[in-house]
Length: 498
Ligand code: BGC
Image 1 (tube, protein in one colour):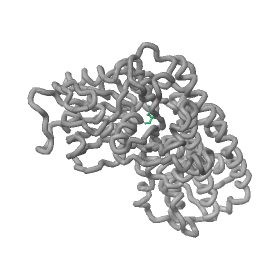
Image 2 (image 1 turned 90 degrees about the horizontal axis):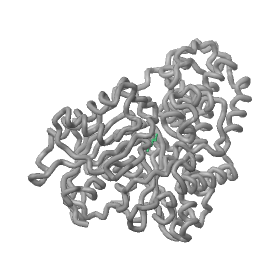
Image 3 (image 1 turned 90 degrees about the vertical axis):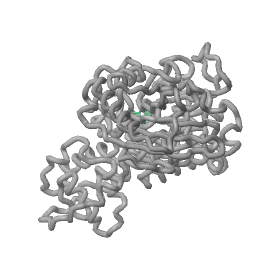
Image 4 (image 1 turned 60 degrees about the vertical axis):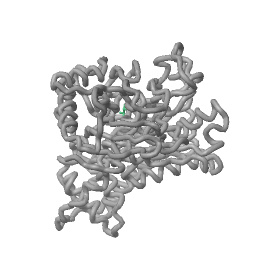
């Protein structure tokens, strides 16, 4: 299932939102003896709204704390929640890159392979092809070998079907940019050790190991002769991919299943970097998902965290990213159903199942503009197994909006924290000129309300003057092309001409 595309779609692994609802079964004729729940549930909604509120001073506090945590993480290893990982990517794509390169992307519910023929400044991207395969659930909880064997065999299959638009010079190996979207302590541009899994992965035997070695071993087991020339986080791939087209890109943010941000940092602003000979700047992978200061959290967040496979970790991620928003809402609705019969006497078995309600379902519900919220009713019935009357549905939409608004606004505050830190170090470098923040990930791409809340928060925080220079832009190529470009920049054959 190879797809050829001039520009490939987003690599974000949070699935295109509102799609799940396109094949909704018709709503059954309810025994809606369900008494109107609106009155009794109202105090719970009011309380939730109050607990999740993100007024400007709170956002400002979050942005400041993000900037302070960045500094602490740059000062010493382990100095803050934010790991501030060195990417070893010291030069970004110039446009001169030439040749055939592969990219492999593992970061969420799908893994993707891509090849690109680069033609230098004149021809740019001559051809791309990609393939996307969902990661079987059991592999997310299996062994490292099983996971990497699966990836290597997907890569092998894809590499076999290379069409004649792609040309590899004789005597060279196919080179790969490997996007691995989990916290990795880079040891070089082409190697790094997995610190821990996130986003629901719990594969045994990978943490503490070089993930490139894991991939190489799996490729050897298959007799696949390819070489990883760059190991990158998805944020770094996104930054590289966006920079290829636009020199003003300084920050990249992923909002998908998980979340993270990276940015261009001056080497002399990284005290923990002692003997790294380098030019003026490098890319820092913040791993901001681990941020935790000043967030307006509720009992539902705390309970979800306690029940997660990584309690106490990735708190920012658990508050703002696609894997978790649906689950928070489910927990709120379950409480309202149990305490106040929001869904009448519906059986709550399905609604009691963790993660049964996905963020795409919230998104679909928020797009329903009909008077009686028929789509909301159908989704609640089909996905969560509950019957609802229009006033209950209205409450459900309000709950979705409350959680999504909090997430979007906090994400916006995080972005401002990064910009603020960069501006404090070199006045004018961010707000004095056009600065682009490249965004990717399914949550950002597919959830219009989330996107709006995010950009409103950024504007509120920056004020109109500074905000007019900051461009928040969806980076359509995702990290795939970026990883391939970084493979080109680090090719051992120097097939680029820099
Ligand atoms: C990971 C990051 C990644 C982000 C977005 C997080 O869970 O820790 O490395 O960039 O998800 O995919």
